[in-house]
Length: 253
Image (cartoon, rainbow, N blue to C red; front, side, top):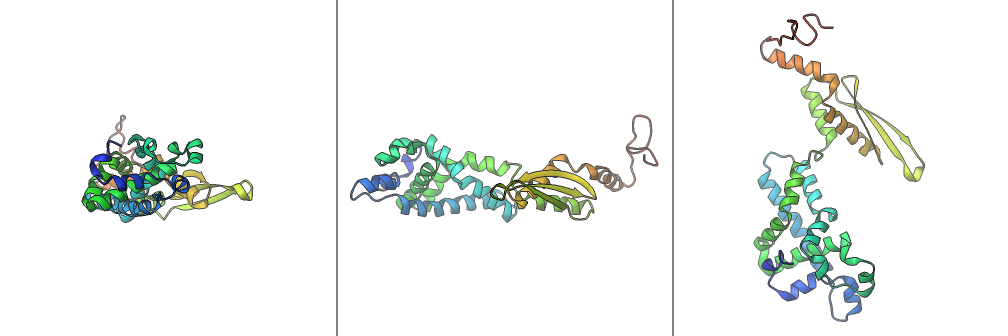
């Protein structure tokens, strides 16, 4: 708790933020941290959204929302809470203690949000902002630079438009029983297969196929893109090793 302690001086709020409902159920008079968690969740979302807005000018709303979602998820918050010593400081009921509650991601993430809420009540938005950015700086940086962020289908459509091609087409097939369907998508651009992907829903499969197409560099479009670059240089050509013009010679292959 050494990371949190400098930002939160009210020991009553600190205790409240660390009180799990299993403890309050066993100890009369102890309030659980759930109300603080609600407040902290809102403060966390605001601080992260504001920080992303100011530090990533020009990034579209959709990408900002995805970065924020990645940063404030339980999966992202739990290891941060664990590293800050939140698990050891939690007040848990006997049953939750026996079941390993100190290491449960959901409990750790909820307690961290409660601590942020407590910090907000104790010192206002500026102190809460300082705590959030101190704790989450690395997570925000990692999420902001993650290549998988953004809607791959939108990016593939934008790239197709820049290349002067029709919008991508997706063919989706399904397999497996009704309770465990698996979908496979094939993305085609410029009349050629550009990527494949699968997922538990049609949308996931299509996004995976679009991401695969983007990662592959759209092989069917490379010749067109090279031609566009050549025309942009007013007809300049790239000599090949045998003196031919362009990748396939004057007349192509």
